[in-house]
Length: 337
Image: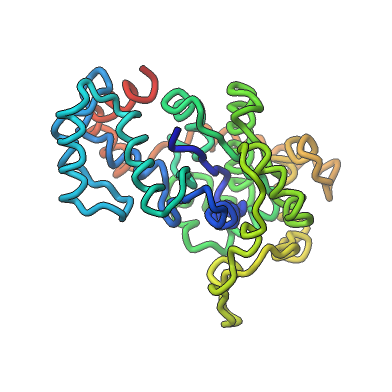
């Protein structure tokens, strides 16, 4: 059943690399460059009744997949409604995903899902509801050393979204990034325990890039698909040689050591990060640089965590929530009903 696969992880954890690798598999068409939750939410708002079934209003919704024009999408919805009533929302997305994969000559379709939001801290927070909608879907959770994630985020243009959403960001972006990373990783791992190892796979980024052949074989075993060498040739014909480009934009092959927090973070930054998220680093098998952060670092981390937990949404976000409560109720019906 489609959607067949969701790739998830804290932003800056390497999810785009895995999206490209899997899209190169002859059986999987990834919706590259699209946020799966955004596409799903585009369809939800206003096109679903209180029972989670599609209404004729869905024909006017924005699709966002790029493989059907708005007119084609509207006709598709109306034809399906004429043939199948009630038409559950999850069923409609499955039919669209089938169409998407078919147009690419493949049986399966997958999404990469990310978010930097506050109320929805990441894609991994949506695993339980997505699992209820599509019980056979697989979830691949990419986990990367949080210090490398932090180092990347500090120079990331999209980090302004985190600054807008988290009141503690301007006070201490490193400590806030540590809380943010820990929050998302723990959500994903908790969801994985909930849905079980047949549907959830956790991959350590560092282990994968150190042995991509073995990593791809293991990932294919989880997906129930044969390994194909094309997966590791995803970059061929796309590489760009401009030195100013990062690995993502340059379409580099799987390359270990692209980022190293030991070179890129100061000792003070590393200690602050580990004072917040050191326990999780240890649980994941990452060695700490500061096994015993100072008392002052621990006290700072506690204050930061308390303020982060209570940080309000910006006014424009709060106003948007007030005006969309009805659509939020419909989303809960589809996701949780």
